[in-house]
Length: 235
Image 1: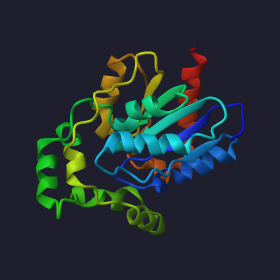
Image 2 (image 1 turned 120 degrees about the vertical axis):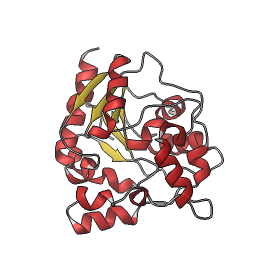
Image 3 (image 1 turned 90 degrees about the vertical axis):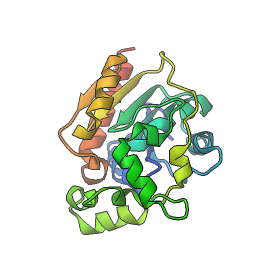
Image 4 (image 1 turned 180 degrees about the vertical axis):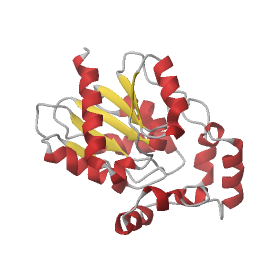
């Protein structure tokens, strides 16, 4: 990838597919920004976090110079493992409507008891249902108007092993010297934004929705790069 401005590694949640970031990838490239929607194959046991981090790290080995790690939604929990694994650490980490690292706790422990109970009840043969089936009604109908775009998004949704959702995350957290920011796109991540602010991170908000990375890639791309470049300009 070309030297100059930082490159962007766009990491999707294990709950969705790489296509979540494809529009932002294209939007950034049109602006001359090197970007890659990472295709890491989701999480696969038994070494869930370390294995995903290693595959993500391999996807960015050819980045030339500084790079920014952007994580959407459930990918936020992977941040410490990716930073710890990458040959060259990112110059900044941006959590995009994302959960924060939860060392020593499982994903289900971060969810509401109601959702955790629902997922255990819906699991079949040890597999959780696709993400859009976690809620009633299906949130993608309201969030993604374009039927073709929605169909493509739904086609990539995996069925995660319930044991991944029950496995404690590694006892890693972001080092205090790592520049980090949280970009809140929806009200659902207000608590994460507040915690990020408490940690002294840069926090930005846009009145959009959780899947705006899919439906409004140009706007999300601009906000993301402005946020990351602001972090780097602060030294």
